[in-house]
Amino acid sequence: MKHYLLIILLLLSCVVSAQKKTTIHILNADKADYDERLGKDVQRLIGNVVMRQDSTYFYSDSAYLNEKTKFFDGFGNVHIIVNDSINIYSKLLKYNGKTKFAELFHDVVLKDDSTVLKTQYMTYDRVGHLATYPDKGTITRNDKKLVSKKGYYRDDIKVLYFRKDVVGTAPDYKIVSDTLVYDTENEMMYFYGPTNIYNKENTLIGNYGWYNTETEFVYLDRRATLKNKEQSMTADTMYYNKSTGYAKALSNVIVEDTSYKAILKGEYGEMWRNLGKCMMTDNLRAIYYEETDTLFAKADTMYVFFDTLNNEVKRIKAFYNVRFFRNDIQGKCDSMHYVVSDSMIYMREKPVIWADNSQLSGDSINVKIKKEAIENLLMYPNAFVIQEDSISGFNQVKGKQITAFFKENELNNMFNEGNAETIYWLRDDDGSLIGINFSQSSQMDIIIKNRQISNIKYYKNIKETLYPLEQLNDNQEFLDGFSWQEETRPRREEFDF
Image (cartoon, rainbow, N blue to C red):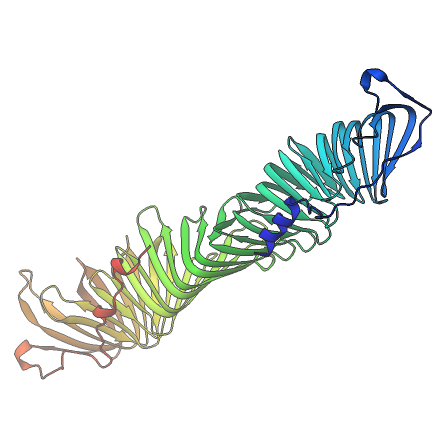
């Protein structure tokens, strides 16, 4: 509301209800006479003409003054001095002394301290302190330059109003806007239409807001975007400080990185450009468009760390209720850390990964990525792999540390180290159950074929027993710590995007 009142004050002429009529005084003219062709009340003034009304002085090479109507025309080297602070120049002047309203033509220049307005036609209302140009004008102030189709200047409150095709330039930025108000005393620019702000690092796009040109702090509302060549952040509301590189995005936030083919959505985001860090939270969802498939993810909070020189992502951290889904693999944990340089994902706090009919878990899981696929993963300690049997029951592998190796994103083999235990359902070629194998050893090498355990090699302290199904006691077919978590497995439909 404050900003709208500013525009209203700017456009109103502040008409005084009881306007005092004042005389136009002739202070100087090299020659003065009356020209009957112009009328008996019109006086012709020639050479170094100086006139005054109130505290305003009018200079010109020549002039026609109608003393009765208080209307005069000024010709050549027109110069108006308003209250010893405003200087206006032109080649032709038409002035109404009753309304104190001036029209200026040809090479018009208004100067007010460091503010300079240039146009070809301008009106100036002395009562309202309002200068107006209806057809293209240029404003310069110190190192700033603004051009627009239409414009207004209130010299009493030092505010400029620009309308249509507004372009502002400064050494460090460029502004293109539909409507812009510039408060020169406070160095504040207010936007009331589609606006783009360009600088060397990025581009800001918004529809409403303000820009402090001294602190370089920007507020944009009604959908705003901050972007560079490869990354962009869009939100309903955004704050950005160019000098510190800090940005804050609120409501319906979308972050996109075209180089990594990634899109993040949430309700709140922050970026520290100079520190190479950004954060998103509140209903966070992410998509990673791989060549072979699409990865969906969600978490309470995510941090992305990037190189400040080339904007390349270095690390990603996600916290609390982390879940991800791809057609061939799914997972969950409470803490995830991805390091780009070594293509490693570190999952902590009750991590679980599902691959087809296999569930892999441990206190910690380290995942090695190669060419957008899992190469291997390390589970430790308390590693546990559960594989649903092709007909019934569960194959199980347990140990202090298990390394699982993948081929084309399918589990290929596992190496189990330290107190290694297995239970697997041994079947004949026709699928009939031979028995349930219980085994223990120091180490095991487990071969997977057709998504089932096909062979196990044991090393040191080997103990192995095969039981018929009918000889098993209740729950004997489960290793200690068995927990089949299929009901918590991420599903595609929960990743609403």
